[in-house]
Length: 128
Length: 128
DNA sequence: CGGAGATATATGCAATTGCATATAATTCTC
DNA sequence: GAGAATTATATGCAATTGCATATATCTCCG
View 1: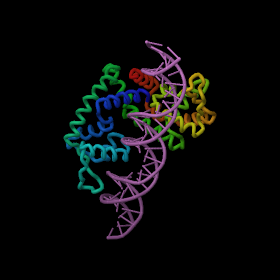
View 2: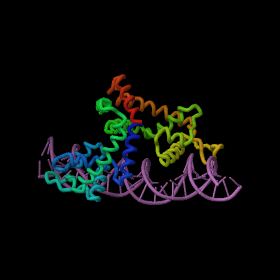
View 3: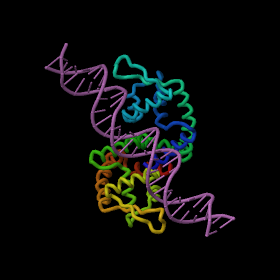
View 4: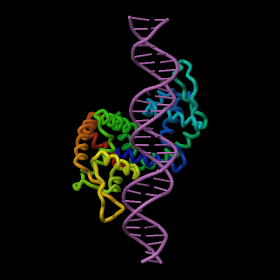
């Protein structure tokens, strides 16, 4: 818990210092960019990011207001919608990754050797 | 990040199901109970828990309102105060520990062997 | 077909958090 | 020993989160 708090706080701080939005924006954008169509249903994002449904709904509002994603209708089911990443969203994700990757390097990369990092990942995977 | 989120969410959920307050209350109470005098300065709690100063200030308000801690004057420095855990606070911490220890067992203990848990702790310690 | 649930998403409202700054006291410097 | 800088804690206000529930479909079953 403490380790995560420290690392997360450090990363958020670096995003902020670079004038970038919080990590949760990155998580959503990255899920969208990762899939080839560049779009997902909210409930799919929810499952992938562990964001609560109501928090995600409002996070999408904010992303949409900034023009980073668009809500589009989903014809097979009128309850649903697509969340599609825009070009601006892709660009933002890339900009955030510049900072994020550096942060990871600083706060994790320099603290653990390659085998240690792999061991850590393997142990954490057992918790999920 | 994901592993921590999952485990933390599961623990908070179990606290809530038992009608208990959030984990952050436990963290503060535990720091207080751990020291023999049963009291600390806010800035000491802050350093030990990683809570932000303004969040801690308000968390102490809530704990005080519930009668779990008391703010007492600190004579050597009139800016400061002691935060002293009350009997009710000690009792609450103990009640929370019943749930917390079970949660840890469920969400960590059953997922990792003893040497794995030690290895995980050692790796995470390197991040801090 | 006509509900009775189930599912997908949104939203009003209260609680918490974050930010910036306030307040009050202490220490340091010349 | 009078500011100036620093430290300890609190607080007004905006943003975010959590909770409960709303809304709109959809699915399934008799």
